[in-house]
Image: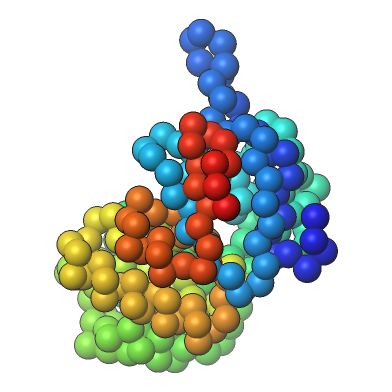
Length: 225
């Protein structure tokens, strides 16, 4: 495995128990991702894309194999250690936005900085929300925002702590085509500006084509890279 890789995956397997015995979701996956790469993970529904993303982020544990995130073996960290690594180095964008309903747009974006004790959380969050076109929506709650606006808030929250690595799981899945393109323009623009490494799960060929590299899964195995 290359020592400078921001993600290094070796012999990764994920199996889950079912009534008939065991179901293999991922089998013998291996690859490295270098800092600054934009990588699309594609494949049919059920090919293991979202499972792989969860494993890479340390949200789930593999049945076998090893993942190194920013040089650290995830198997050597307990749940708290993985959470600290995520808070410090990783941003997330989900299909379902995952905003906290009881917080305003500003408060949702401030949250990662507040958790790290940043005294300038409010001013930084407001500046980033203005950058994504939501300067007039700071005090709005998620229920008062359109889907596209909610995903812009989610993008701002993902980038606010300047992560080295951004994971996005079907980020345009709940948006219409035009809104999805606008959100993706923002995502790739922020990504270039901040030199983040992007790993993007998508079924959208146009979206995958905007990445510098594509990893294809078929039935839980690496079919192309």
